[in-house]
Image 1 (cartoon, rainbow, N blue to C red):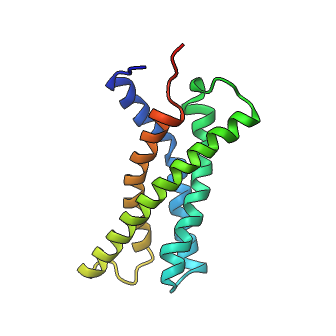
Image 2: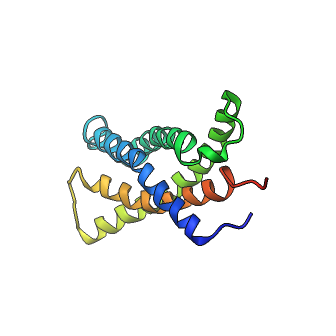
Image 3: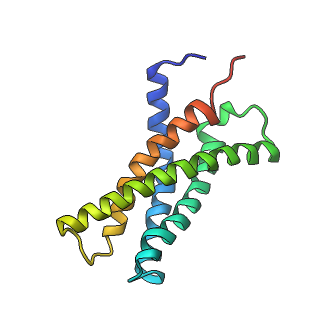
Length: 153
């Protein structure tokens, strides 16, 4: 079914607004983990903490998307439908995470090369935020055009 750019843009704006909850969870949890549990650990700060924070945020975002954003595109509301959609959403989330992770590493090494924000607990959060921008666009595309696509009547 063909959609107008206006409808897609409206959905992107709504996706961005509703995803802010997941972004706050992701950034907050990543900062908390990297500033406390994984402090002074490259692997903990740049590998383990992002995995944990991204997965928790993905669940938050999915619950919002399923129940509010694309509610009208879910034809059957059941436990099976919820987990089927979540499986697809989480698979797309893995792709989005890999993209976020690559961008996050590139930004980290760029900041190190430029000598910016060294020894700052905000540096991992900035890397994470920039990565989230790229992964968010990917996640929106997957949700809009595949996971919660509009079906013909």
